[in-house]
Length: 195
Ligand code: SF4
Ligand code: SF4
Image (cartoon, rainbow, N blue to C red; front, top):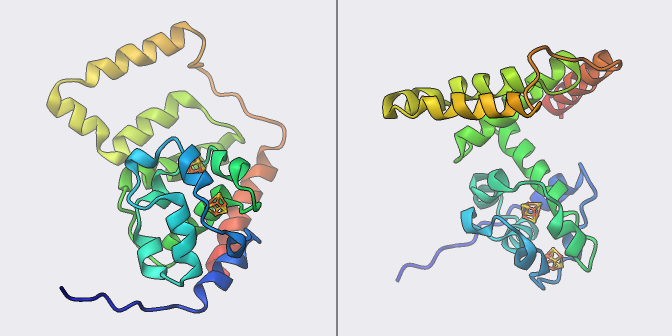
């Protein structure tokens, strides 16, 4: 059987930690993070494996994995870690690095959801559900899929239920500091594109 030659990227850990610190180097592989993670069923690498591969400079493997995209940022792992490794924040950083380096997400719908979510917040400083979901469904192709399957009506029913329970306002509400929120999101994008 052919042996895989390990290509080490010695700068990877430092580049990841530069946006932290996330303290990945403190990991002693106890797997408490993985054992508490609620979405390991959808991951191709477990959270402790991602940390290990970051330490080992496995840039390509890490930035191409599905795990960094399916992570729900619930912070269970961070709370459980006995060494204070900021795993959830590190997953976010890895997503950013994948985008900066032009690595396509193996989960394009999740990427589209993130982008739609942030653009929605930029407009009013908070989410407006009545436009978030339709725009996401349109952009991700989910609406077309449901149309072809003849199941689009289910979404309408769900929307109506949310509206009925007061979860789907008809008119958007802004916040006082919406300009500041927009500035933060725009600045962070500029900073990342410079680095
Ligand atoms: S819980 Fe912390 S120390 Fe344990 S494997 Fe996960 S990151 Fe490493
Ligand atoms: S933050 Fe992500 S990796 Fe950590 S437990 Fe939640 S889903 Fe799993």
